[in-house]
Image (cartoon, rainbow, N blue to C red):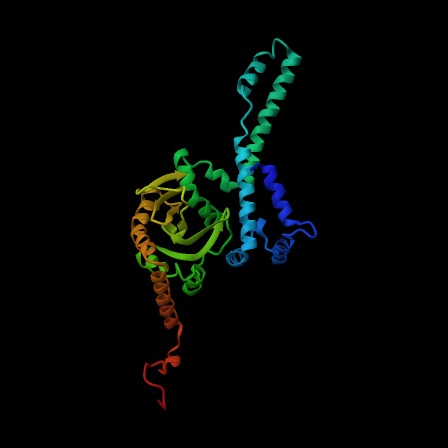
Length: 331
């Protein structure tokens, strides 16, 4: 599908002609007034972004439009990256410089024109990287690993690095609710195994480039300023990491990925390579064990965790005891 055709279809979906047989669906999407452009670009405040994510889970129309936006963006980026620097540019510039003394005016104009081309090419690259720093970092992933490791790195950059959010830990109950019944039970397992200088500060479900993730953001390390992402996303039929563990340094980040039967799992951080691998070695067995459970077993584990949370929040008076632990008068 061409980029032009994708753009036309996307615009047609957003502005259906009166009487079009799909205008009712588009009208329903319009009524949602969901800021999908800003959400996809990571420009929304933290709370608004979460509201949009929750809305997308229950609104097929908006979810489909988000996927369409993401597809068009991906095609535009691919087209930009595929545009080559003009062949022989360096040779032509060098030849023009050599000809300056022989043909002062013509040579000077040639040098100026070539220099202008070089400046334009450099500015285009610089502006492209500044406009989308996530893509600038993703392009640095080693070639044969890029397709699979960037699946996790994309959400780490989108959600844990460039998104604006509080670095203060969220209440455990809030994180469990945002993780949902399938993955709320993973939270206490991770917290129990983390080194003493790390703690989970956010747990939620999110989207990056139209793809859903389960995401635990962990903070700590030296000075408490390091950020670690534990990410899970259902693998596609075309995706595979084999049975091993794959690691790469990309920009200032360390990326480790492995695969369970149904999920791609990533541990990504700005730690050094050895410390990031240590965290992966701690987290991988419990994640593999957790996702190997049936959905019903995970829901049971989540329900048990919710019960424990509620019991810790219930005041003694609610259970018929006084603060001293003795039965209340009249019991």
